[in-house]
Image (cartoon, rainbow, N blue to C red; front, top):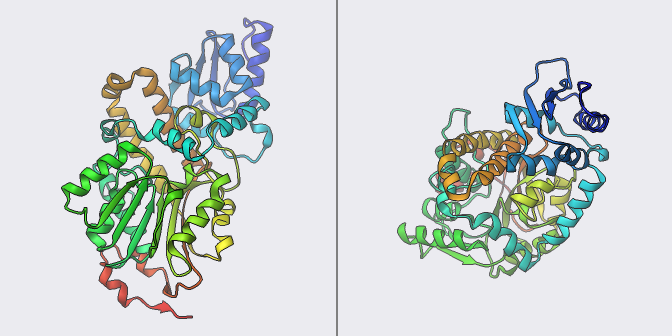
Length: 416
């Protein structure tokens, strides 16, 4: 599929690469020689590959080689990066989608980035202990680094993140005086929101030193230190008894090999009479997380299928009360993040360099593309212990955006 002035080896490698891309409408240029797009339609982008070494790497392990070469500036993209990634990320259950080398690298990363107590601390440090200044450049003012909730598509990001926090609180029926434990609290936005708006007491656990430091500062500034305690420790060390267990954006860092331990922690903290919510990036079927993302951005990450996540609850007889997929809300969130990141690239370059900027651009663009095409999902799972008796009769309370905690007493509950 490539012009004949390429060497026989380059033509062979180009054909193999083209085969792995299927009918994706992407034009490939190798060493200055242009090949055809994978479909008859107009190409969404052109990938300029400078040399045989990069071309061979793409054939051997397309995902990691592309990520590294793009980050280093060796591969150039002409056209729409997100649309190009959408074309490449159409979900498939084919095991042949990843080369033997890619599968080997994935297994190796699972081993070296295992989420042990020490390993989790190292993994989290590499991502979340970048300076708060960096994240302020493209997140909302509260530094909420999880999927927002958009009551409508025109809702600004700031309001959508507050709407998400209220949505989570309505789902677990928070009331004044409730005790809440949060596993993985980010910069503290949800814990502070719960204490301030819902009158609950919160203990929030996190192993990111930078995030805990800033969360404690915010609690002090807002006069909430008597209602919120931020603890720098691993979720496995959570102690005490609570009414509610919350985890928003932390399950992706637990590792599927530790789901049994997480279930044990949840049962130890809320017993048979509590309730909780897990909010996490997931998949429609079990599949390894991107090896390039694990190598460069999120070491130790894994996005579970619902069937895998449910195993957290089964040994303890927890009931799954509600499941919702907010995939399109995460796509919209990422549209905001990517646009803000692009506006801040000059400052990010000054802070971390051009290679860092390209890597994070690819991470954000790839995440956006993955949610758009369905390669990734965003699940919210509400669960309750066998002795919890206040299950709402309908889901109407979830959409009463201006409801206050006191209104919870007026809800109709199922009595067993």
